[in-house]
Length: 395
Image (cartoon, rainbow, N blue to C red):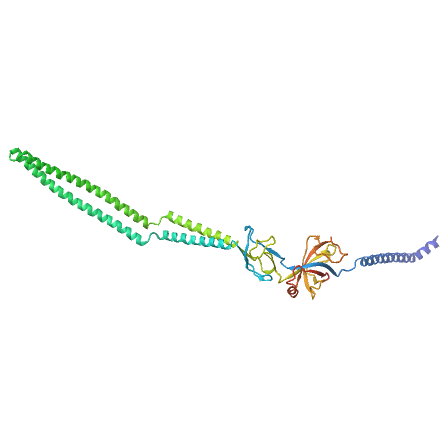
């Protein structure tokens, strides 16, 4: 038993070394098999997904800002073009007059009439603010002075008459009293006494009438002077109510001018942007058609609108380069551009393919490719041309 135990003890290091070797060999085998299978799967995936280099699609050319239809103002019903101020292919600036409608002359006359009303109202306001003319004031002052002079003259004349009658009355009364005494003494007859008394009574009555006339003269003449003075004050006075009325008339006239100017503006059709006249729909003498007066586009920079199949759109990104050609030889040279916009919705294909095997109900996404300046100049007059767009997805 001792010998066996000793032999096992002597062999224990060998057994341990052997076990460690087996463990290392098994781990290496497992790692090799795992790596082999992963590499095999990777090679299968790569083989199943070939690299896409380009995406081709049919498209059309149009100005970068799209083609817009220019209409007459919506408030003008049944508008007829009187004068057309542009020609086909002409480049125009924003705000430039495109057409003049047949209502222009009538509305221009209304504006001129409103402006004349403003001038009249302003003149009336100036007159009210300045008061009456100096000539009118001086004339009325002379009337007041004349009335006052006449008042004083008549008062003095009537006062003199009263003084004279008072003196006559005094003499007549003395004479009547003297003859009364003589009559009592029997020196004169009763008829002579009565005659002297009648003279005194007559003078007294005349004096009373003269005093009444003096009061009447003072009252009537003073009233005339007061009326003349009131007229003078009214002429010279600038009343606030008159100023307010005159100013209101000016404001109303100015408002009519603004309204007339707005209506006149509706009789002219102006360009909403810089661009080129691509097509004229309405000629002088014609009613504005349902397509407007002209088609306007910014042809100084053109774009190609490519209709990319929905299966290919995942490869397209903004900033990728593209080339544009035409199958019908309308383009003699290849055009170049850059993707600037990728559509956000899927629609039906608008540009039809001449290939009979192509899908006519394909679902596509619009991708806009801005052409460079040289290419844009070449196709500035080829809006809506059908083209073939090739997008370099690796660019």
